[in-house]
Image 1 (cartoon, rainbow, N blue to C red):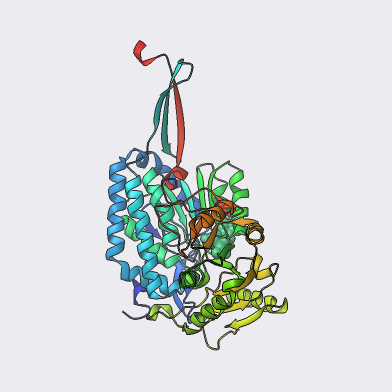
Image 2: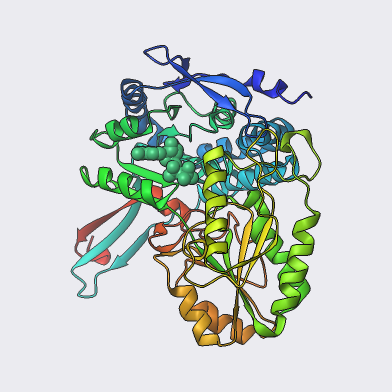
Length: 489
Ligand code: ADP
């Protein structure tokens, strides 16, 4: 397969009410390969009117879709899971092309994305209610769950497929219809996945796809329309705040997966090999562009020099190159602007007194590549320790005192993930309990799993995706009080 062959299999249009359409004003926008800057394809650029047409279709399909049995919805998701695995090469290729990660990591994303479809096909038939007698015996309580209604699903570019299935999976399982708005930087994967859902048997109108560069006006038009009942957003805290404000007009149900600033804490009794492996995964997976990425490293003085030396040795072995061409080379950052942002944070840390151990120089040539970079003795208040880096840079800080490192870790407006390395499980669990984050990895650098609730506290968001909790975000609860005792009927 040539580098761009797969692109020809994508329908570069909007999907509204079961029909592939161009934008009403016929406009389109280019999609780029971040490894070369080349244009891969042109996608239709939806207007707010197109988005409202998509919502009208989702709204019209809602009542019928809610009546489809849970078993049938589960079967559709199961078929989608199987098709996605069968088409893994095609999907991995398009993800690597438009997003830039290596083919190997893109295959990892396809498996992770498929697992959400399998998980929610299993959850679709396990939506439970409750029946109970009121404490005073006057009423019988019937507690049931229903689909929330038409949802707007807004996804980011860093995991173009998995962030979609993590929302589409539970929406389908719960019986909700959808308007899907993927990031404008990675719309090709979303279009390919929309075709797959249709082939898996999803009825017309249930899933509608709106690709657009006019995110602000399109999303604002949808949020202002009373037919929309929920918005699920994954992206930056900055945009999340805008979406939340828009959702306030009609008091929408909201799920928000926002930014992180994960501390990676290595105690004196950590297994150094495991900590280095975990650091490589938590820092370099997705070229550092993950909200769960280890953002700041706190390493106990006892292991500090060994940790810095070993990590920079491993980082220095990594080659940069176009992800879609195969091999395990590390791809580029998503845009030139993203690279400039990362580099500015590195320069700022150096100005603040940090030491550059490896990397830190922008390589020549096309593509927004940035080398794996290790910074040592970074001041705790440097911008890079307080801001989501979204790049392959590991700023490391030394510590001696457990309480001090805990205070530093919790000194953040966000609280998504944290990583703790210690061979003493009780100590690790004590620390985990005191960390103000939604997720903690103990002696592991990878925690995401469709069967576990993903989400944060503080300004990292609202709600959970995946796990037994994930489907609840798409269900509303109804309580019916029934007079009298059962025995009196
Ligand atoms: P990132 O920083 O990861 O690029 P963003 O928060 O910018 O994340 O984008 C996440 C999603 O939000 C994308 O689908 C993007 O198109 C969308 N988006 C960007 N700006 C707005 C906005 N003003 N209103 C609504 N959605 C937006």
